Image (cartoon, rainbow, N blue to C red):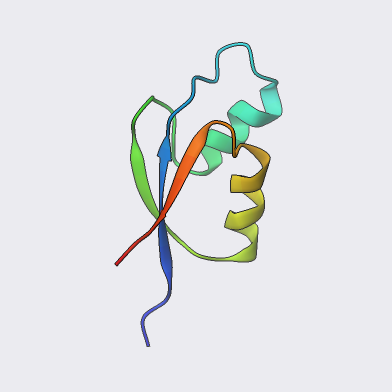
Length: 62
């Protein structure tokens, strides 16, 4: 059975944000504007997204 995935795109700049938010973006695999990564839909990833939800856009991957 295939694992559920989500697409996360960085839409906001980390400039002027706290260090922990910038580190969270790097942990998600995002470090430049408009980059998109496909991640496994786990509680840990959802928590990281929730921490920087004002800087990212989330879509369901097909």
